[in-house]
Length: 153
Image 1 (tube, rainbow, N blue to C red):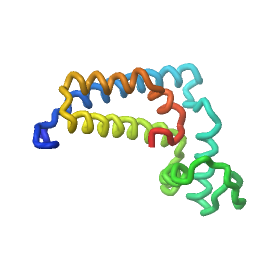
Image 2 (image 1 turned 180 degrees about the vertical axis):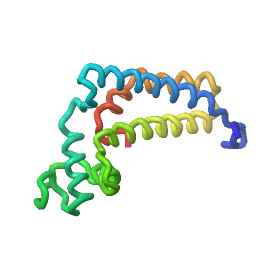
Image 3 (image 1 turned 90 degrees about the vertical axis):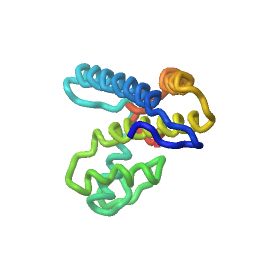
Image 4 (image 1 turned 180 degrees about the horizontal axis):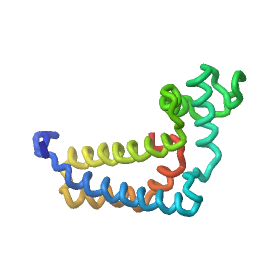
C-alpha cells in the first residue's frame, strides 16, 4: 500500500523515502570512512556514549546504576537513554553500535513525523522533499547520528 489517508487526502511516501534513503546513504558512507580511518573499529568522538554504555551494561548485568560495578553513580546526563541502551546487554550482546543504530532509526522516524506534518498542512510533494532535505543538510543531523547521544530520541 503506497497511499494512506491523512486529513482526507492521499499520502505519498516518496518525499520521505527519498530523503531517508539519501540520509542513510550518507550515513553508510561516513560509517565506512570512520571504520577505514580507525583500523576497522567504530569510535565515537565523545566519551559520553561510552559512559552511557557502561551504565547500561551495569544496569543490565547487575541492576546497579553506575559506571563501576556495584557502586551507584549518577554520571549520566539522561535517565531513559542508558535504560534503552541496556537492552542488548540483557541478551548478552555487546551494545557499542546500538546507539548508532538507534540514532539512524530515530533519524528516519523524525523525518517521517516531519513529512506527515508537512502533508497534513497540504504542502506539495516537492516542497516536502525540499524541507526534509533542508533538515538533513542544514542542521547537525548527521553529526548527531554519529555522536552516540540521545539527541535524536
